[in-house]
Length: 164
Image 1 (cartoon, rainbow, N blue to C red):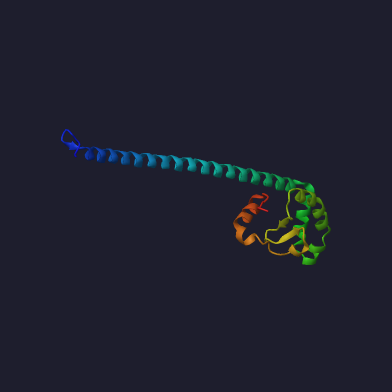
Image 2: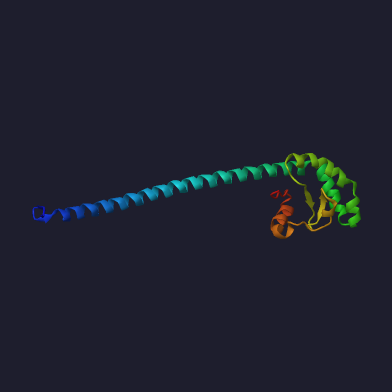
C-alpha cells in the first residue's frame, strides 16, 4: 500500500523533513558551540586580565618597598661607603662595620615581606652587601640574565627589583 499526496509519496516528504531537521540541527549545534567558545574565551580573557593586574600591583608594591629602602639616608650612606670599599681589598668589604649595620636595618623589612635576603650590587655587578658573607665580592647571580636591566638601573639611578 502506497500513500500518496498529490502524486508524491510520504517518503519523499519524510526525507525532505529529515533533511531540514538535519540542517537546522547542524546550524543550531554550530551556533551553540560558537557561543560556548565565545563564553569560554571571555572567561579566560577576564582571568588573564585579573592576573595581569594582580602581578602589576604586586610589582608596584615591591618597587615601592625597595625604593623606600633605597631612599633611607642610612642605607644610601652605607651603599656609598661599601661601593668605595669594594675597590680595595675583598677583606675590607667583608669586615666593613656597615655590613652588620645594614643587616640590622634591613632584616625587619625583608623578613616582614617574606624575602630571603637582599643584595646591593656595584657597577661591576659585584655584590657589595648581602645578608650572607659568602655572597660578598662575587658577581651577582642575576647579572648575566639581567645585564641590560642592571645597566639601565645604574644609568638612571633607580632601584632594581627582582622577583623573590
